[in-house]
Every structure is written in C-alpha cells, then in structure tokens.
Length: 232
Image 1 (cartoon, rainbow, N blue to C red):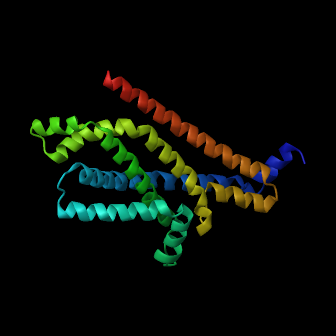
Image 2 (tube, rainbow, N blue to C red):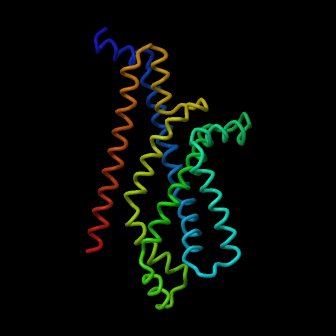
Image 3 (cartoon, helix red, strand yellow):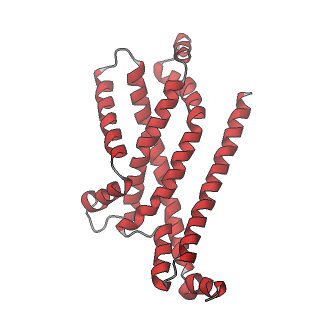
C-alpha cells in the first residue's frame, strides 16, 4: 500500500481525522484548566511552606497548614499520575453522570499543584533574606512584602522550571484513555485499531505533541526575554 493510500485510509476515509481533532481539543482543554488549578494550588502551598520555614516562631494555624501541605505533597508526588486518575474516576467520582473531562482536569490540576509548589518554594527560598528585611523596614506587612518584593523575584527565577512542568503536564494527559476519555493519544489509538495501521496514526500523534511543546517553549522563551529586558 502506498503512502497516499495509507493516508487516505487512516485519516480521510470515514472522516477518521476527526478522532484526532476531537482528542486534541480535549487535551488542550484539560491542560489549560489543569495548569490554572495547579498554579493556584502550587502558589498557596509554596507560600505556606516557605512562610513556615522563614519564620522562627510560626503560629499554630501555620503549623497545621504546613503539616497538611507536606502530607499532600508526599501523597501526590509519591503515587503515579495514572493511578490518581483511576482513583478519582472509579473511587471518588463514582456517579454515572460524572464528567470524564472534569475528572481529568481536577486530577491533573491537583497533581500539577504539588510539583508547582516545590518549584515556587525553591524560588522563594532562593531570594536573599535581606529582601524581606528591606520590605519590612519600609513598613510593608509580611503579606505585602511577599506579594510585591519576594514573589516577583521568585517567579523570574523559577519560570523555566514552571514551563518544564507545564510541558510535562501536557504530555501526561495522554493517559486519559485509561478512563475511556477521548484525548489525542486515544484518538490515534482508535484510528490504529480501525485500520490496523500503527505507523501514520501514532507518528501523527507524536508530531502534534511535538508541535505543541515547541510552541509552548517558544512562548516561554519570549516571556523570559521580556523579563530580562524589564530588569535593565
């Protein structure tokens, strides 16, 4: 069979290319909203842990929040993402009306939050202690010092690591097929099972992921250049 015939059979016949388009749409939706959830959770956990470590005598509430944060990080980073996805779908969201898309978004968002938290915490801890002291000496509260002085510097430091985490998240969504959800990888697998041709469907999926990753990397590189320019 020629390449043209393979291409027609895999993608044009019965409009099988729509499996890839549908899967790509779900992959992008999951990644986008999971990133947003991961950023919110990650920054909150990072601030709690960094504040606990920076203060000589943290309050009782901060100690409790720090313990909860450590347990969350241990559980999420210590178990595989696919197992977390299966637990979420089959044990937590057991309702037959549960949206697979929502389950995937929440699972990947919570998973990403643990890694974002450690990345951001390392950035906060890398900022010189003198920055905090300078902010407090100017009359700023601890919260405002963190918001206006510490966090902007930490963000610039950890931006490459955060970008790497988001790229990893994009690729990790390929396990959504375990709960029977149509994602990009699942779309390619459906075409492969229908045509018994693995080459074009899987190569196409790989190329689409590659293009997405390269596009995200280019955007991050542009942002880094703008941040460096703003420092001058």
